[in-house]
Length: 394
Ligand code: CTP
Ligand code: MG
Image 1 (cartoon, protein in one colour):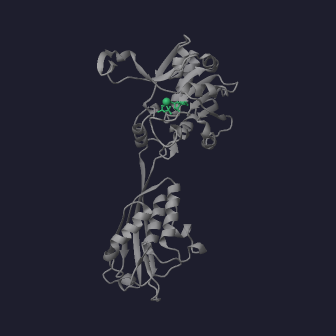
Image 2: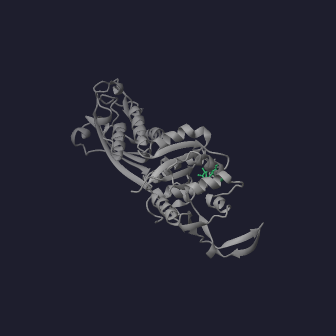
Image 3: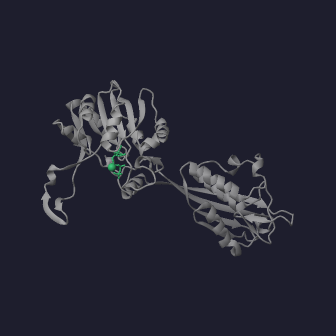
């Protein structure tokens, strides 16, 4: 490791008009994390990193500080600053906070949230080798036309064209100088740099550094993560009570005219089997380890109490429920007259399809002689993978 002398300026102060989300673009989530967080994850691994400066909309400085603090590293200084009206102004404001030991600055768009560490490292190395400005760029693959209104004027030779990406790398002294002297607005740092007659070279970029501009871009980015799908199983059994006044609860709702079930809670074997299936799918233990009989707040509790808490827990781990299947095993109660009502109540609560079926045991055992009811449930849950599947290559 050499000395730490690289700063990354992460520009995240845009409004994201074209994305049209509720929040400014850099604060929008992709696969469960904000674009800023994805960018920072790749940036903090950059070799010889000394400083990270993030420019954000003024009213989101506190929120950005929270996001940034999750990535803090010893030996690296972090600053969050208010950006400006334009990208260029945001960078200009960020550069006013540059540490004095920084020799190389990499300017990066938070909108290129999946640009890999490897790209930052390649740009920085090339800046050192050439002692000049370096940008990543990719060949233009489409045939390019010059137009005037709806008329094609000519086909432009694409051999001499590339599309520019970020991070764009500069010697710190040169970049601060051109930003201080800037008279006109440019869409990237290389253009501003060249307006002072200074040369810029390019290296081969990566498709991973594509810019998220529109909702379609965000969807494409989401697809790169793929989905982590999990299945789980749960079983529960409760004994029928001898108290004729006790109502039967299965699937959170009352089954009128049926004998109730015993239990620390309301004996709802269907809800409890679903809770176990969800916890099992998420690898979060079971109903006993999460809602033990030693907890008085669950005494007599309705199945919806356990289900809601379980849904909150698995959502905390990033999971969404895809579907639930439950089977009731026993002679009683007859399920068919209640199926639709129970499925609808559970759908309302779980926000995913729930199917309820039933079977008997051919008269055998405690389920065959109506001593109790058993329920078996399976759950399918899913969340985005934590990093993109390498479908785009380097
Ligand atoms: N940017 C910035 N300050 C601005 C404008 C843009 O820091 N005043 C940043 C954006 O946050 C983004 C990068 O520059 O990371 C590239 O800009 P762009 O993709 O155009 O993002 P937005 O300006 O947010 O989007 P839009 O143009 O659709 O509003
Ligand atoms: Mg913009």
